Amino acid sequence: MDMLIIFKVYLIYGLACFSIFSSVFFRNLSKSRIHIAGVLPVLAAFGLVHGIHEWSALYLEIFRSESGVFRYIEAFKVVKLWLSFAFLSLFAWKMLNLTSWRYLRWIKGCMMTLLLIFIAGLVLRYDMDASQAYIVSLREQIRWIFALGGGVLSGLAVYSYANILEEEGYGASLPFKLMGLALIGYGCFAGLFSVESGLWVLVCQTFWAICITVTLWYALRVFDRERDSQTEAALHQSLQDAKLKELGELISAVAHEIKTPVSSAMVSCDLLLRQLPDDEAHRRQINRIMNSLTRAAEISHEVLNYAHHKPVKHERVRLCDIIHAAVHLNQYRLAGFDCMMELDEQLVVYGDAGLLEEVISNFISNAIDASQDDDRRIKISCFRDKLNVVVQVLDYGDGMPQDMIGKATQPFFTTKPRGEGTGMGLSLCKQIILRHGGTLLLRNHPEGFVAEMRLPGGNQ
Figure 1 (cartoon, rainbow, N blue to C red):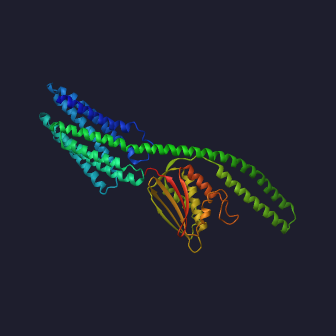
Figure 2 (cartoon, rainbow, N blue to C red; figure 1 turned 30 degrees about the horizontal axis):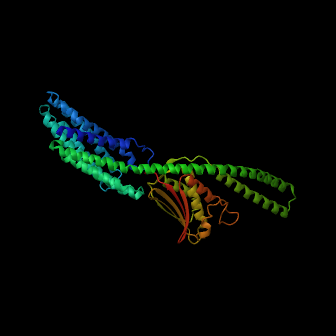
Figure 3 (cartoon, one colour; figure 1 turned 120 degrees about the vertical axis):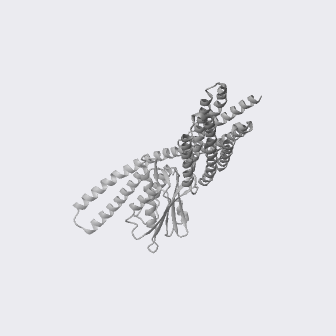
């Protein structure tokens, strides 16, 4: 009866470990932007190797009665045990990089020191004549260093990382915290107590392995929600692109039809100006016509830019580099301005650097135009707001009437004097931001006006 119970416990124990492996392995985490996605495969490797170790443990007991084989069986069991807990320790090592702990370098240094001591002892204490005692001692060291140390440290790191997930807006802190506690419990029982102490140790290890499996399964739902969100965003983006493409083709055709007669009229005006007598009144009227035609050509060019949809390159780019490039582009206009910048140097986005630079450059240009002569200040900032990264450009001008803010992104709407703006700048910015899956927000602040771009954040 006892042997039957032992077999059942080992069976459940191995199934729990294999479930840890399958929960991670059969999920596509390659496109996830959650940092822990790159670390979980190591935990899956621990589950796979440890499951094999536990299921083979009973089978290897059969060979105990055969003389001359015991030494090699026990050595094989120790190697399997060390390999599985080595993966658990590697998971702890990688999880440390995702935490915000102080003295992280000291903790890693201690881990490396323990590993070197273990390896040195592995070589120096080897004795062929006392192989059984050597293997027993080695197994104890593996449990203390790799099982207890790796389990407790990985659990604490996962628990700490859960708070970071909550701050970033993924809302999955509780399952990851419970998973961290389960790892700590498992590490304590696997490291402090040997299976030879009694069946209760094996039962407790099985219980904590099941806890890890269940909490991991719930924790991994955050990736399902992220994938659903990415799918919904991609579908919305596809529909938006289809609408913009259809509208762009219509606008492009109209703009081309306007551009051709305008160009012809400008050439005719130039020829007429040369043929007419040198009369001031004639010259003034023809110049007025040419100025109007030039204005029409500029508007036609802006409309063509708005209608033209070149493919967006979704590359990993540092946001601060884009902002610096936009500031440099407007450097000549920023002469005499106090340009304040508060930038998070670690923020990254997935998008087209050239198009995003165009948006920020337009924000800066508008801020310069809105600034007053007695208060020439501009503030540019970028920061993370949960799942989004935010770029803000603030000016200290008169702001914009509330009823006009909603119209600011409409094509051809402008608050600038007649002839100084086409009203296509913010419309083009909104189009570019939408194609990046973001939003454009415009609002007044107590001392001026804010143009804000919010984009989905990338991994740092």
